[in-house]
Length: 95
Image (cartoon, rainbow, N blue to C red; front, side, top):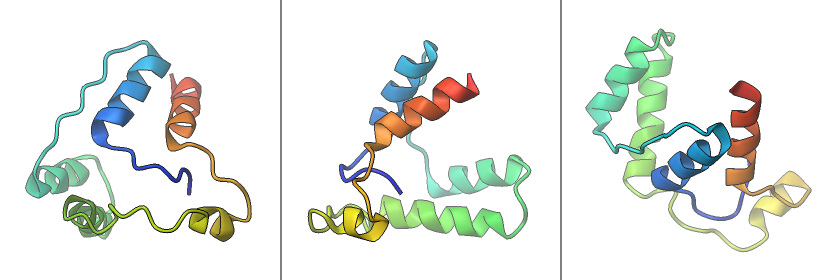
């Protein structure tokens, strides 16, 4: 778990573009498209509804609230790292 700031798809695409040097475009899709993409990825059968459920929760704003400042730090027992920094580091390692 990282970050205490909200990060959207366009933010992630921009971070991936910067980190990889390759253009990455965010294209929002429907829940049906997400479900089909997960199924086509070779995911285990149980993972398809699990991931689709997570997408649905996010799409409906259930995770949009910022919480109280310091909640994540208290849960982690340390200061959370910015999510976009973690994405950039993972991208550097992968590409």
